[in-house]
Length: 482
Image (cartoon, rainbow, N blue to C red; front, side, top):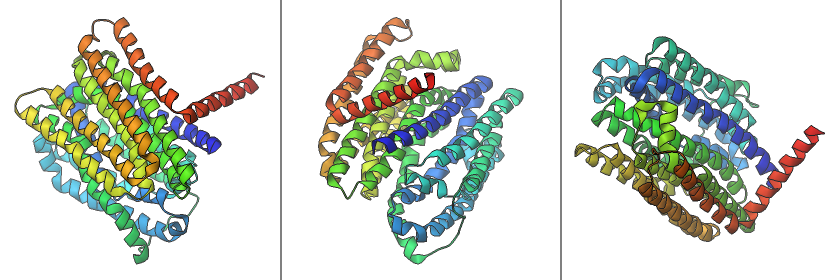
């Protein structure tokens, strides 16, 4: 496992660093080029496309990875057909709702702008699934090439057009280029022919696996995009832009880590589910790795993120430090929950995801009430954070019920997460991160160091693997020097 995990983790990790680095760089530059108002309008276009993707997700990609080998050959044409049918269906939904969406965001004249988003799902429906099949054997290079190939061109085109036109319409061309190129690469890099078909014996298990995820997609939409929609409709584009600037820092890191661990953990856990000892070991090690990474990244961001946002995006995006802390804790909860989700999916517990995401949207209800009563976006962040934290603890409880292998690690990791969240909020109450860099930096190092030290002291296996990886890197570097 060690060599394969390290190699796959390095490939996927570098790919995700490139992908999220490009997205973050693009977000920062576009925000600066367009200003808060037009940047906020650009964000609403992305909200439309991501919302449609979430509410129509049958879990096809996840099914490809977790299905048993003997099931896969007969199922692939059916999966490709379902993906293809989803595209034009969702495109028609966007076209029908584009005028209403524009009116809700306070720009009724921009119905044509949101109608352009219909092209995205239509293109994505043509995607080849073979790059996902390759992930079953921990080969991620094809997937990384496909994603980065589309994203590099799309982000660069958006930045150039934003600089030239100073218009939110730049986002349309960038999104179209990203989808077109990545879909084309999925076919070019595939090892198997693209086939369509619809087999009844294959359709039933796919729908059985996917229907909770389909329901879950609507819930995820409310939990992940609902806060932005509420702010955009009740507060306006400028407030939305400031909120999204913070979320680009905190949420960008959590999405990167959650996707990395999800794509690495699910194949490893699914492979070991029939071997109790191996499964237990992988549950412990992957869980410790997720807590280690959130301690090293999101915990310091929660302390010093506010001045970093101003440094990157400009003075027009200055916000309350507590908003950053809440969104960073929410992001950390997402990373830990990704570990829980991988365990649930590895044993076909798709209904667990729906249950804990239903709990997440309680925070959205509180956010809506707070804004309706005239409170600011910090309240939105606080309620959304509370909902996500509650969902993560429910998810931890669920995996203890699914498998005894995850019971003790879930209790320990949950306790450590609660301690770190409490420590961050205490520090935020005691310091002003805008008063200077020295004290906030020291506080960030102390909070982060506490989490890293606790995880490494508790997980001998993870410590051994990190030492082995560091030794391997040192040997490679030494050979190159020689």
